[in-house]
Image 1 (spheres, rainbow, N blue to C red):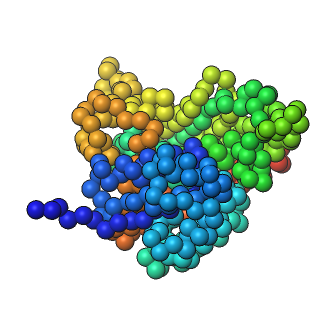
Image 2 (image 1 turned 90 degrees about the horizontal axis):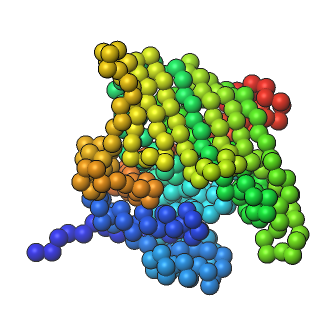
Image 3 (image 1 turned 90 degrees about the vertical axis):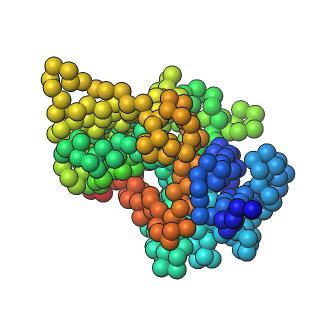
Length: 383
């Protein structure tokens, strides 16, 4: 007897580079490992260059191609729009898609400005009243070890949170001959390391603590201010974003925090580290050991107390039960699958998934406060 199949959820994706490939893998995989109320279908891929978009669609498994995002949004067979294009496109696409009744997944940071992010959050609120769901793609929330960390905080295992320290370190633009790509241009990217990777640790700090940042004092720096223009014979252009951002913060609950985001940490490829210290214990996570969580229980006998290494591969751990036996590790790509799963489950249940566009706006407000503080010689600025 044939097994009933869930209704199809037609997905249209805008953008097909690094994030597009990760999201494509997630949409292909989600329904094959998780029981979902809807079956994601890779219906259409959108990119401005028809030849490149067609090649990407064939490689990544998409059924058709559009070269205009407005045409993608207008299609009757598209129920969800996944935005993986640069930040300067997010607001227009998301607001139009939500108005058209399409569910939306938007890559982080939500927008390039607070005004854009606020308009997107307001559009999401209006759409939610009609049953249309939206989510911003802070994928690291879906690392099982970090989801377990959030569970431990919720259970009170750390007590009152007092310290948060977070760093996201990369080195991919250390060389001065690295070209002036779109991520180094403010008019396209919004900001540099701050928005690209700093947004992740701001979101994680607020997610793990369950609290919000209320103020920051900051400094930013651009180490290499001119770079070669892509595909040019020696011409250079001006870098208009930060290379690094460092800032202190305070949470509504009284905890204090430090943050560092840089793309100039030579030898660090994708090093995200976060540690929480509370009145009863601590936890620490390093993305370069992403299946592990370090946990210190301050109530242990002092003679045997210390950080314990938790291998987060048990079926009782968040998301892990759908995958492999204990001890068989998960990777970076699984976080995007978990993200797709949570969004589809929210759509099926008629509930708003997290992080919401409102959560994305909150991160944008923090990023804006950081830039305002850095521009005023590190003066304290409210979020």
